Amino acid sequence: MALAVLIAMVLTSAALAQTPKDEKHWVSAWSSAMHAPLAFAPGQAISGLEERTLRMIVRPTIAGERVRIRFSNACGNQPLPIGAAHIALASKDGKIIAASDRILTFSGKGSTSIPPGAPMLSDPIDLKFSAFAEIAVSIFLPTNVGNVTFHLVGQQPTYLSEPGDFTAAAEMLNATTKPSWFFLSGLEVFSPSQTMTILTLGDSITDGVGSKQGDYNDWPDLLANRLAAQKGLPSMAVVNTGIGGNRVLHDGAGISTLARFDRDVLAQPGVAGIIFFEGINDIGWPRMKPPAPRPGGPAQDASSTESPFAKELVSAQDIIAGYRQIIDRARQHGIKVFIATLLPYEGAGYYTEDGEAIRSAVNKWIRTSGAADAVFDFDSERRHGSVVAPGASGQGLAS
Figure (cartoon, rainbow, N blue to C red):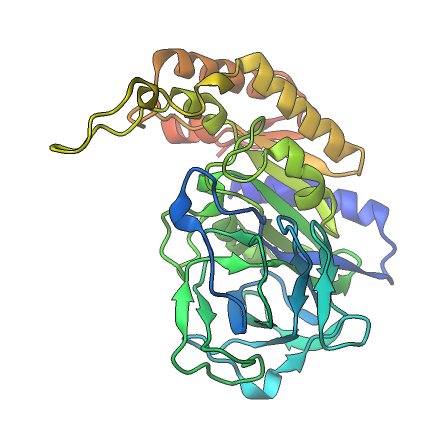
């Protein structure tokens, strides 16, 4: 609760100061950080999407009446053709409420081709929905898509049709499911001037890895519930740009946070603040222990006894320098930065005493440097029950 109140205090005053009351603007109401299938996990290779319809279910955390969709070919090596796209209110099990179905267009056309590496916004469309309503976005991919741009861990399964364009179908019969979102990076709402977006930026803990699909019990969604319950506040969307396994300084599970910051944060409309909670993978991955050989399995060669990331060791100073970059780049765009301390990780497969010393040094800097607008002390919360501390702004609450 203290975390929610602090966000409201800092961001509401900023929004009221910057935007005239009678204007509307676009805000990000739902988002997902796009990445390529992980190079070190070949089982994630994606194929068989051509001549199929993909129906993806998303849940914006604020209400809307006019929306547009952001697609992405960020990881593509060739143009991405979208033969048709629809948006509708979702029912259940991949079904839609037929009366709500709308055709998405791109510069007035019902199809488009997204260049390699580029995003693509749909034209605005009228669709009324409440906060936390589930929305279905359906796309038909007429030809081979090349390298896939996706988000591995979706909060709802994606429904993959039999061959054909079923974007307008109320139900896709004989559909199979995949656990990921494909080419879909955002849902934006045309909102009153005081509506704003809070963006959570992090790794698997933020992404919600391990949560059951459809439960929405990751911490960004729980925060969205808290903010929605606060009376008298402007509408605040909470969008999640976590990637499981992501690191601040090195690629691996998606490109590094420093590399994806412009695309996943600065390109989002209406962002007033970010909650940055990442760095434990920077410490742990280079210290990761390879899996033990299976009984009776082939012997391991010497090179397999070292983490493939062993040459990417970082110091506390390296991580802190990355944090300073994030803070400075956000503030250039008027975005407030809330930074969270790194949680204890003893017992994890990549725990080491020297890694713990780095985590402690990073957390000390987060708490004492005053570099961020406020600190969310998740580490102390796990240990002692104190979650929020003053930042550079001098504002803070304790719970």
